[in-house]
Image (cartoon, rainbow, N blue to C red; front, side):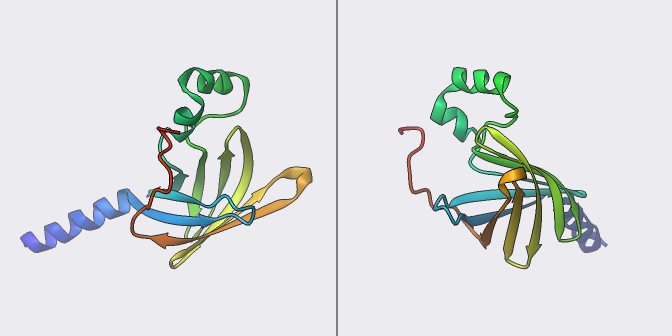
Length: 140
């Protein structure tokens, strides 16, 4: 009986919040790590927490937040509604926000971003176990 309860609790916790790490490759050369968290039918993805604040400083970030559509202090952040392996929502990259669709197939993720009149771009990534930081962003 204790084993059954433990299995149920573990399954419940995994269902409530599942987190994965991805290495995203950008055709323009800006490769980055992404963390995704799934809770119920919502998925949220983001680069390193507070990275944008670390790069431009807290005061400039607050000015950008007031003057632009930026909501999150990460360089890249998205929130979307999940439907099985597909999701749609808003994608923030630096100081711009776009609509996007995404899909997860096994250990691969694809994000297709709608740039309006400028067409679409696509980012692809693979699941990784850990991040390997290549820069000291706070020192930079």
